[in-house]
Length: 167
Image (cartoon, rainbow, N blue to C red; front, side):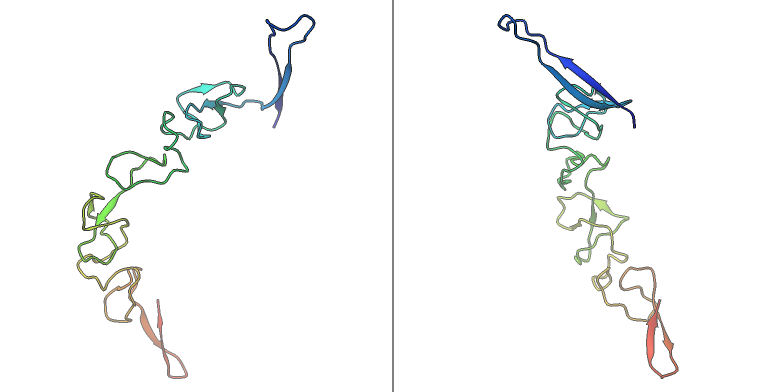
């Protein structure tokens, strides 16, 4: 990548006689677009492109709220039903109904994260039975997918006579 070398010369209006202006050299990648980082969190405002030599510029446009440094791609998303995207991924934290209280929610039942029947995931494949969830023990060939992996394993008989689940 071609880089530009920019020399900034500061004017010295009130300097003693004979003192020279200071020159500072900055390497800036050619074609670089930088963005204002008003809140100082190292993430730029996509709506405010600025010169890459500006003090408060960064080389990314990933900030979703440049007025508050607690909103940025490294922030933790908070499950508080405030409809605010804390980590700039385009989504607010979503909770799901956990009717059987097994810690796993039903993807078809989004609900408030303040609800006592909530789960912070949508991994349950049968929210009416707490023995069926991603951490459940799988019973082969019973027609039920206990661990929500989409498979009810079958048993195979090997030459040694032992049965082993497959699937």
